[in-house]
Length: 99
Image (cartoon, rainbow, N blue to C red; front, side, top):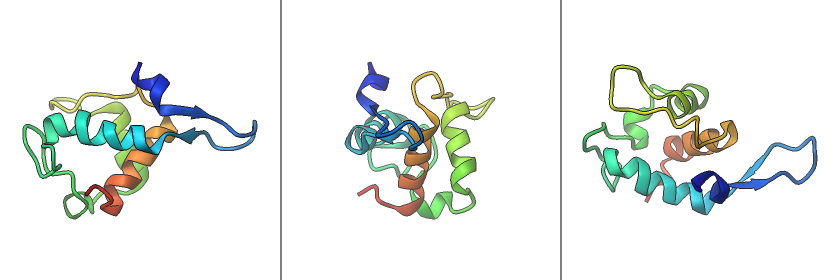
């Protein structure tokens, strides 16, 4: 259900997949926010605002979104998110466009 809302398809066969930015923003604020706090300042999970994530590059953070962090409460979202969607989320979190 979530996946169907997030993927908008591709424009052409060689293009990168497009994502539904509004659906992904809601996903971050609601699904990520359920553990990381509705303002992303921390809760069960740590603060995920840009100043707290500056030690991550986009590729690494995208992998954390997809694969979770073993031994912690951070789940893998790979069953529900594509690489393009995880990349969008990582960029969104790293640029601070969360307010």
